[in-house]
Length: 255
Image 1 (cartoon, rainbow, N blue to C red):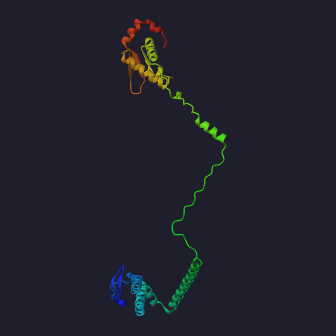
Image 2 (image 1 turned 90 degrees about the horizontal axis):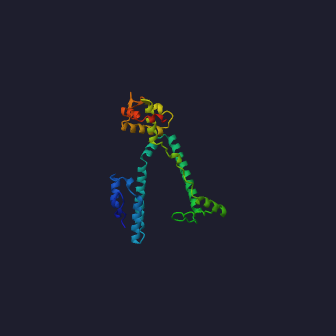
Image 3 (image 1 turned 180 degrees about the vertical axis):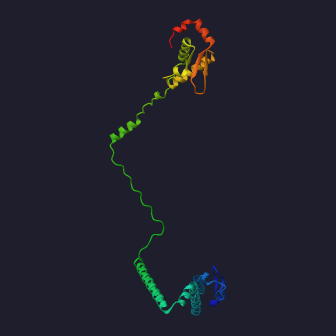
């Protein structure tokens, strides 16, 4: 088995392993984009197909892959190498001591994780969503049957009828004000409408005004007003005066 002829199918490269090494050395392919794990898997699959262990090919492959990993590791930290080269001997010693301390912490953390994994090795976790929690059973508090029946009887009683008497408007008849105004004109030739309506409600004033319009339509009165919102003066017409002369009994009627 010739390692350099190993066919690779990676995300950043497709072709023989020898061509990949050539492109990397000529810096035509960024090694950071190369999936080294994919190369290893390709080699292992090729060995599985041959069904025999080629120690010489394995050794050659390990040398090439280790070289690629070293180059890739150096390419990931170019600035750090430049910074370390510029340090003084004392500063470099301090930086080395700091890295050793970090390495010791990582090593202790790895040992702790290994112990946890060994302790939890015999435990198996359920794969999938957790089961739904059972709904609690709701129980009704003890109730008195007689009390419940009395409440139901109260609900069954028809509500009292709502009275609308306070919303009913009572209007006096128009004929009442017609007779009143005719009586006034029999005793005098003119009167002030606002003075005669003093003390009456708004409904009664509205009905009285309708009576004035009815008398004016019959040409029994005259309506005058000096200016807007000025007092309304009501006078009798000649026909009203002649009618009063023909029927003197009207003067005996009160308003």
